[in-house]
Image (cartoon, rainbow, N blue to C red; front, side):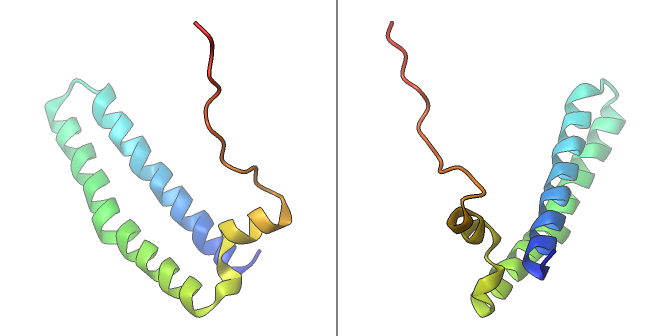
Length: 89
């Protein structure tokens, strides 16, 4: 696994943790727990994820071979984004 892949994997896992905390906030009825989960989610986003995204962007600008998404598209590993299907009514 390359450095670029590891950075993107870490970023995806952190974003998943943020989403889980937001879900916990919505799922609980305890106001104290809701506040805690919301604060933890915001802290994770602003203190860790945002700076890591900046670092990933910097690394990709300095080392183009670490652009994971573009490499996957070139190798045919990821499907092209497509428009949702239109249904006749």
